[in-house]
Image (cartoon, rainbow over the protein chains, first blue to last red):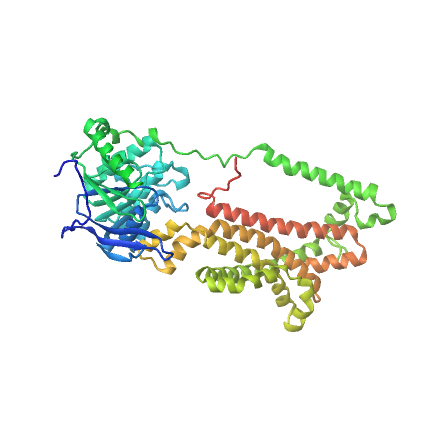
Amino acid sequence: MRTADSTIMSNTTPSSNALLSFNNVSMTFDEGTKALDNVSFSINAGEFVTVVGPSGCGKSTLLRIASNLEANTGGTCSIDRESIGYVFQDATLMPWRTVARNVELIAELHKLGKTERQQLASDAIDLVGLRGFEDKYPRQLSGGMRMRASLARSLVMKPKVFLFDEPFGALDEITRERLNDELLRLFQHEGFAGLFITHSITEAVYMSTKVLVMSARPGKIIASFDVPFAYPRTHDLRYEPEFGELCGKISHALRGAHE
Amino acid sequence: MSTTDTPISTIEEIIPDKRDKVALTDYLGPIVVFIFFIGVWYLLSCVVLPEQKRFLLPTPHKVLSDGFFVWRSGERRGLQPILMSVWDTAKIALVGLCITIVIGMSLAVLMSSSRWLERATWPYLVAIQSAPVLALTPLIRALIDGTQTQRLLVVVLIAMFPIVSNTLFGLLSADKSQHELFTLQGASRWTRLMKLQFPAALPNIFVGFRISAGLAVIGAVVGDFYFRQGGVVGVGAQIDVYRNRLWGAELITAIILASALGLVVFLFFGWVSRRAIGKWHITNRGH
């Protein structure tokens, strides 16, 4: 494993056993806006990669391309489309379904039998710590609990690749840190490959095996940082000098991204 | 990890539900308005109207004694004939409403899936909504046979718009990200409609039901006026007879019962709505 050194990632060749790889992916929207320019990187199983960058730099577009919600206009993106978990910015729960029925939804859309999907949902509810809240409706839950339910829903089909679109951006800091820990625990437990989008450098470093910095539009990967800290990570890691130093470096690169 | 061991309820509290409490003031309001209404009625009847014109608006106690407390007198006077005619109108309103709901919701589903169809039909729906149905009565009479069918048509014409507009609005109200969630799972159009758009539309659909139910009663009463034949007649026709013969107490009784029918239908759909979506849907008053 490399140390926390900044390396310029212009044309890294994606490894062959990657679960998700972007090869020179570009994206120009119909109205002419260039959102992504020649983005290449890949994620293996057990890797958690976070992309930070200025607002509107095309970070979310990466996820939308990976999940086929948008078609890239240049390059290739390879991923097993059958095995994607997508966690949206908001919890996107169906207000008319209870927590349990919300968590079942994706299994239901995959036409799994009732008993099977109830079992899967029940397991996922345990994993995110929502036991006892199965029969509550989303409006009865706090923002953090809604996000847990949303996570559980994505976990049900045990996807190999998880895409996170700033999932904790709207939460207060304490809840966010708690959910960071929960998500890390799930990451270790399930061993998926994660692609995470955030504005928070601390969150990026705390969660990831690697942090990518994107430039302002059109989005390019301008720096890549390996995060050397071993899992499981605990809350106090955030106050270690090495942690702060790495955050500083990323912050510096991000400052460059805004120019 | 120590941080994950804390019971969840200590950190993120369940949001309490305060909607089920009914305050005394909730009942007081309607009672106050009712007393005020009766007062104005007495004022109009005994003070404002000159004595020789009092038959136009008999006092409340005269309406009770001559309208409500006479079971039957002759062929048309008394509570029993009025109730029969209200029942006749209620049947037309209900059947008409069911037809309206089936047609209106199907139309809304089609419109929600085709922008083209939505644009093509919208102006005409608005036009039907604002067209004066009374002016159409000769045409309806000329084109359609049978008073029942004619009355039903009036109901459908009057009650259609709120069902279509509210259902359509509701079907299009699901969030973009909720739609994307379904897109990611490769959900079919039908699945999307049944599991996302339709449940999301329910609050609006029930609003449409409630408005249309009231309008269906109005439509049925209006239909009674213009399309009638012998035997049991609708309350609209009954009102017309009382008006012609200057039977004030019966007239007011019939009007009150016709309004009560509208209120019952409105309350019924309110109740159905709370049963169906009350658990998850909250209406916001802003404070």
